[in-house]
Length: 106
Length: 122
Image (cartoon, rainbow over all chains, first blue to last red; front, top):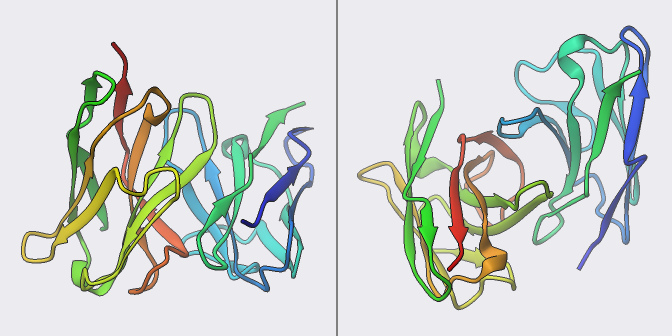
């Protein structure tokens, strides 16, 4: 089983600032990595897949990078609607999720 | 517009059963794999089962293997999850999820329903 570890658990950021979220896989998942955003009371929303491809309708301020075991989600300039929990997920064989990073207002 | 509408959740006693349904619209249902992903209260996400677009391939997480059965009716654009021998740890919101591909195991989960809550308690 591939274990996904996200850091930090909570990230405090001011609106307009840059946010950098990390995700580490316990073994290589190549570029089979997706990122999701979940707001309270809502279903998750796909942001990024194949490590760096933005999903349909996702703003350009969201970007993903990395391959192998180390991945990053960057939000270039946080908007009020971006405060949420973010999950990474590998899909190298059976999919597995990280435990999430909560992005909160500083 | 892709829409996924789950139903069938509720309160059930340990050892009980439920059948979850998901009515899909806005896309060619048979062309995409579908999955069920659950989220226990205040916890993270767990993919529990997936089914190919044709329905001939299915996958299950070890935590539910032998107790849950996924199926689909492509003529009715509906996904199902039969959940048996329920345990307290199965308590969660169950999301119906569309995959970006037609094959399993589940991969890129591009559209999610709003979920249906299953509570297992005596």
